[in-house]
Image 1: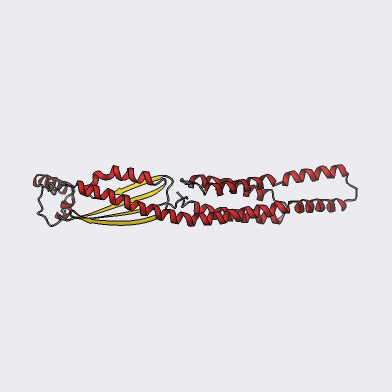
Image 2: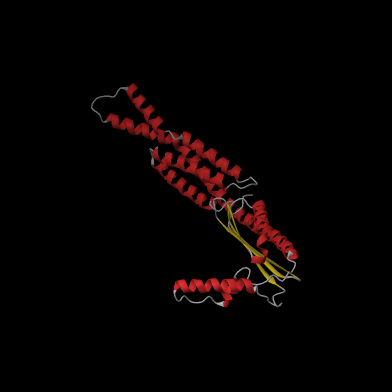
Length: 287
């Protein structure tokens, strides 16, 4: 079943080391674009996060934010004074060049990587718990995308069925439309003072019928609708293929309108393009 590209999931867990929380969200995107946001002490998890997300998802702009609250937050804080002195020297030199720039607050210095000394704690259990929680979060995230995808598929199928019904109605009216064109041409010829050549009349009718024939466009419309119904049953990302089919449907609907010789086919062409645009809007959300 196709999935939506829009979803959100949040999961958290606790242990002796503290608390972890993942937030995963995604929006539409042409390709798979992964944006991990990890705390500094767990930055090395980024390749594993990208790999895990890449296994589960095919398209979408995905943000994966991890929050870590350490149980050792109340432990004694040790500063890397050598590094702090270097930073202070650099800031003083910058202030001299900037001529009176505001000093950097101490809280900003504390946020800089390397200012606080590593207490030598073992983060391996935290990393393992973070990856396990990510897997659990992605399970719920994918389930949400699948549920939303089911709703989108229902809408697309309904519009595709309406499109096929319109094509069928026009096909059924083609003999009547052609007969009206023939009658209209015969009436105009009857108004002439000189009788028309019967052979010439038939030639003109054949020419007009060929120029206004939309049977081929209707055949392709119905074939594309059948392809859409088949694609919607696939267990893989189908958004790009469906988007291509929308382009083909729109081309056939435009050709149908340009060849129109009756109000019925003109109105049908407009209605078809409305349905195609409605399907396209939903397909933009599919993976």
